[in-house]
Length: 180
Image (cartoon, rainbow, N blue to C red; front, side, top):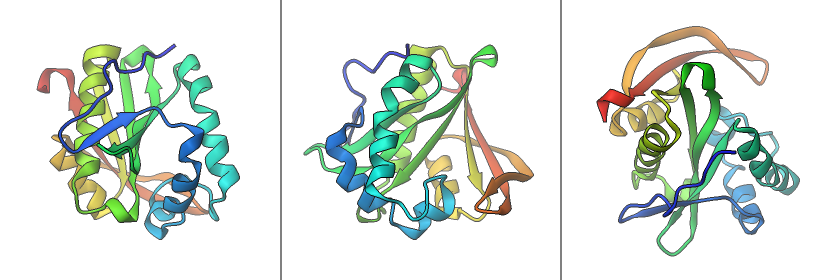
Protein backbone atom coordinates (compact mmCIF):
# COMPACT_ATOMS: atom_id res chain seq x y z
CA UNK A 1 0.00 0.00 0.00
CA UNK A 2 1.22 3.49 -0.81
CA UNK A 3 1.47 5.76 2.22
CA UNK A 4 -0.27 9.12 2.36
CA UNK A 5 1.78 12.22 3.15
CA UNK A 6 1.75 13.00 6.85
CA UNK A 7 1.40 15.90 7.33
CA UNK A 8 -0.45 16.67 4.08
CA UNK A 9 1.60 18.28 1.34
CA UNK A 10 1.07 22.05 1.37
CA UNK A 11 2.60 25.45 0.83
CA UNK A 12 1.29 28.92 1.55
CA UNK A 13 -1.32 28.71 -1.27
CA UNK A 14 -2.36 25.08 -1.70
CA UNK A 15 -3.03 21.90 0.24
CA UNK A 16 -2.99 18.43 -1.28
CA UNK A 17 -5.29 15.89 0.30
CA UNK A 18 -6.93 12.61 -0.67
CA UNK A 19 -9.99 12.94 -2.86
CA UNK A 20 -13.32 12.16 -1.21
CA UNK A 21 -16.87 11.64 -2.37
CA UNK A 22 -17.57 15.16 -1.10
CA UNK A 23 -15.54 16.32 -4.14
CA UNK A 24 -17.80 14.65 -6.72
CA UNK A 25 -19.80 17.76 -7.66
CA UNK A 26 -16.75 20.02 -8.11
CA UNK A 27 -14.78 17.34 -10.00
CA UNK A 28 -17.78 16.82 -12.28
CA UNK A 29 -18.06 20.56 -12.87
CA UNK A 30 -14.32 20.99 -13.57
CA UNK A 31 -14.12 18.05 -15.95
CA UNK A 32 -16.73 19.62 -18.25
CA UNK A 33 -13.93 21.94 -19.35
CA UNK A 34 -12.91 21.55 -22.99
CA UNK A 35 -9.16 21.69 -22.23
CA UNK A 36 -9.38 19.04 -19.52
CA UNK A 37 -11.29 16.81 -21.92
CA UNK A 38 -8.90 17.59 -24.76
CA UNK A 39 -5.66 16.90 -22.88
CA UNK A 40 -6.54 14.26 -20.28
CA UNK A 41 -8.12 10.83 -20.31
CA UNK A 42 -11.36 11.88 -18.61
CA UNK A 43 -14.50 10.57 -20.28
CA UNK A 44 -16.39 12.89 -22.58
CA UNK A 45 -19.06 13.77 -21.77
CA UNK A 46 -18.07 13.72 -18.11
CA UNK A 47 -20.84 12.74 -15.72
CA UNK A 48 -21.24 12.63 -11.97
CA UNK A 49 -20.99 8.83 -12.14
CA UNK A 50 -17.54 9.20 -13.75
CA UNK A 51 -16.32 11.36 -10.88
CA UNK A 52 -17.82 9.02 -8.31
CA UNK A 53 -16.19 5.96 -9.94
CA UNK A 54 -12.76 7.64 -10.22
CA UNK A 55 -12.78 8.88 -6.63
CA UNK A 56 -14.14 5.60 -5.28
CA UNK A 57 -11.32 3.71 -6.98
CA UNK A 58 -8.50 5.73 -5.46
CA UNK A 59 -8.17 3.64 -2.31
CA UNK A 60 -7.95 0.36 -4.25
CA UNK A 61 -5.31 1.93 -6.50
CA UNK A 62 -3.37 3.07 -3.45
CA UNK A 63 -3.48 -0.46 -2.02
CA UNK A 64 -2.39 -1.91 -5.38
CA UNK A 65 0.40 0.72 -5.64
CA UNK A 66 -0.73 1.70 -9.16
CA UNK A 67 -1.74 5.36 -8.82
CA UNK A 68 -2.13 8.02 -6.16
CA UNK A 69 -4.20 11.11 -6.97
CA UNK A 70 -4.77 14.07 -4.67
CA UNK A 71 -7.21 16.95 -4.61
CA UNK A 72 -5.53 20.33 -4.99
CA UNK A 73 -7.34 22.71 -2.66
CA UNK A 74 -6.79 26.20 -1.38
CA UNK A 75 -6.29 26.77 2.33
CA UNK A 76 -10.10 26.98 2.72
CA UNK A 77 -10.47 23.49 1.18
CA UNK A 78 -11.98 24.75 -2.10
CA UNK A 79 -11.17 22.26 -4.89
CA UNK A 80 -8.79 23.77 -7.47
CA UNK A 81 -7.81 20.64 -9.38
CA UNK A 82 -6.10 17.29 -9.06
CA UNK A 83 -2.51 16.08 -9.16
CA UNK A 84 -0.85 12.78 -8.46
CA UNK A 85 0.97 9.76 -9.66
CA UNK A 86 -0.99 8.25 -12.54
CA UNK A 87 1.44 5.40 -13.16
CA UNK A 88 4.36 3.70 -11.48
CA UNK A 89 7.10 1.52 -12.92
CA UNK A 90 8.38 -0.01 -9.68
CA UNK A 91 11.12 -2.22 -11.22
CA UNK A 92 12.68 0.99 -12.59
CA UNK A 93 11.78 3.23 -9.63
CA UNK A 94 9.90 5.69 -11.82
CA UNK A 95 6.55 7.40 -11.57
CA UNK A 96 4.50 9.57 -13.88
CA UNK A 97 2.54 12.53 -12.57
CA UNK A 98 -0.61 13.87 -14.14
CA UNK A 99 -2.63 16.93 -13.25
CA UNK A 100 -5.54 19.11 -14.23
CA UNK A 101 -6.67 22.46 -12.91
CA UNK A 102 -10.26 23.66 -12.85
CA UNK A 103 -10.97 26.65 -15.08
CA UNK A 104 -11.75 28.83 -12.04
CA UNK A 105 -8.24 28.16 -10.65
CA UNK A 106 -6.02 28.81 -13.64
CA UNK A 107 -3.39 31.52 -13.68
CA UNK A 108 -2.47 31.00 -10.01
CA UNK A 109 0.42 28.54 -10.59
CA UNK A 110 -1.33 25.85 -8.57
CA UNK A 111 -0.43 23.07 -11.04
CA UNK A 112 3.30 23.84 -10.89
CA UNK A 113 3.26 24.12 -7.10
CA UNK A 114 1.27 20.90 -6.70
CA UNK A 115 3.38 18.97 -9.20
CA UNK A 116 6.60 19.96 -7.46
CA UNK A 117 5.20 19.02 -4.03
CA UNK A 118 4.13 15.57 -5.26
CA UNK A 119 7.37 14.95 -7.15
CA UNK A 120 9.57 15.84 -4.17
CA UNK A 121 7.45 13.71 -1.85
CA UNK A 122 7.54 10.76 -4.29
CA UNK A 123 11.32 10.94 -4.47
CA UNK A 124 11.86 11.36 -0.74
CA UNK A 125 9.15 9.10 0.66
CA UNK A 126 8.32 6.55 -2.05
CA UNK A 127 11.86 6.05 -3.30
CA UNK A 128 11.11 7.06 -6.87
CA UNK A 129 14.33 7.96 -8.68
CA UNK A 130 12.75 9.44 -11.80
CA UNK A 131 9.49 11.37 -12.11
CA UNK A 132 8.03 11.96 -15.57
CA UNK A 133 5.44 14.23 -17.10
CA UNK A 134 4.07 13.25 -20.50
CA UNK A 135 2.30 16.16 -22.13
CA UNK A 136 0.65 16.62 -25.51
CA UNK A 137 2.82 18.80 -27.70
CA UNK A 138 -0.32 20.88 -28.32
CA UNK A 139 -0.67 21.69 -24.62
CA UNK A 140 1.68 24.66 -24.29
CA UNK A 141 0.22 25.74 -20.95
CA UNK A 142 0.97 22.35 -19.40
CA UNK A 143 4.51 22.39 -20.79
CA UNK A 144 5.06 25.74 -19.03
CA UNK A 145 3.80 24.12 -15.82
CA UNK A 146 6.44 21.40 -16.20
CA UNK A 147 9.19 24.00 -16.58
CA UNK A 148 7.89 26.07 -13.65
CA UNK A 149 7.89 22.92 -11.49
CA UNK A 150 11.58 22.39 -12.28
CA UNK A 151 11.23 19.50 -14.72
CA UNK A 152 13.62 19.16 -17.66
CA UNK A 153 12.47 18.73 -21.24
CA UNK A 154 13.83 15.52 -22.74
CA UNK A 155 12.24 15.28 -26.14
CA UNK A 156 9.17 14.21 -28.06
CA UNK A 157 7.71 10.74 -28.43
CA UNK A 158 6.11 10.83 -31.85
CA UNK A 159 2.57 9.48 -32.14
CA UNK A 160 2.94 7.98 -28.65
CA UNK A 161 -0.52 8.60 -27.29
CA UNK A 162 -3.90 7.49 -28.59
CA UNK A 163 -6.61 9.88 -27.46
CA UNK A 164 -10.19 9.97 -28.71
CA UNK A 165 -9.39 8.17 -31.98
CA UNK A 166 -6.36 10.34 -32.75
CA UNK A 167 -2.62 9.88 -32.34
CA UNK A 168 -0.68 12.60 -30.49
CA UNK A 169 2.96 13.48 -30.07
CA UNK A 170 4.01 13.65 -26.42
CA UNK A 171 6.63 15.93 -24.87
CA UNK A 172 8.52 14.20 -22.06
CA UNK A 173 9.79 16.10 -19.03
CA UNK A 174 11.58 14.57 -16.06
CA UNK A 175 12.89 15.32 -12.60
CA UNK A 176 15.55 13.07 -11.10
CA UNK A 177 16.20 12.40 -7.43
CA UNK A 178 19.65 13.97 -7.68
CA UNK A 179 18.16 17.22 -8.94
CA UNK A 180 16.32 18.11 -5.74
